[in-house]
Length: 402
Image (cartoon, rainbow, N blue to C red; front, top):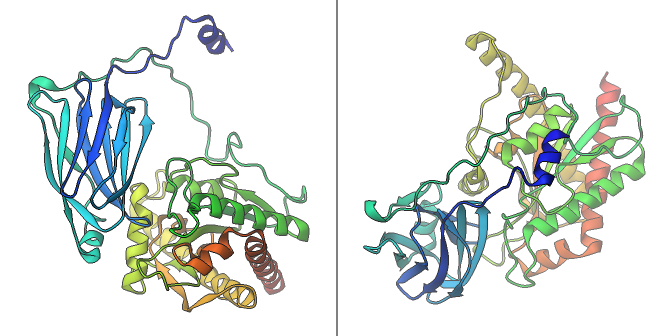
């Protein structure tokens, strides 16, 4: 309360870092040039797929100014990633790569060499991380100065503060299902080339439909990792499920592919070795949001920890695989499935060792028919009913086995 009063009285002020502003962005057939009205700290460049795009983070900058697309760049988007970092995203109409670049001698413009590439060559860059470009030493922005610091104790892992609301019967003995709507906030996921719908919006609508159907059943409790348009890091998604003691975790996505004819839903469960090249590429793409963290077992001996994790995860993986097969059975009458519809991949969100988890790619947003189905209320309701039916059978079976 004292901190709130001090902020309200103006004794504490949050001052944006001094930085250059993005003045103009121009893309041509073979180059991208970004102009600033002052010096910046550095540029960090990385590629993303689904849809294909090149992202440039400018540390020590704020967004603004005009942007012109051209060449392989179909559109240019700007946003403030944080108070000291401007993010510029180049949506690609066809695969292309940044092959190098440099700041001008005065540090007030950044020239990036752009080259069209084959799709396979573009995909091969997805796992390489970021490339940094630094301005000349005499023309770099000073790092932001700290205005003040506030420290506060962090609650325990079971602290209910900031955890999502649980819907359904107020009965802790009933199983809890956590539904994770993929992407969100500054991460739109895939974008349909047919209707412009974004994956983050479709997954949220489907997650809410699943929640509605589960609540109707009255047999389980359900929570969403997000119920609005916000970004959650990958570890926090399954971390929420673990903190809440979830009995099942379902991550919802909508796939994209270079081939517009690719269609149908797929269910993924955890495997340290992807079941095929496609699953491996997809896992690499989704995992790019964050670095994988290990499970914290406190002061346990490392050998004991390893054994415990292995035993627990093996059982969890078996339960996850059983639920995946059940979901495909219940979904078959309602939605189109791929011929090889149960696959294995090392998605970060499936790595909770003690929570059965699946990743449900509900269809291809890049396919005209799938995209229309996923964006429709009727399609979302069919998916919701399929998942809810599978969940009820799953827990009925487990109860019977006990």
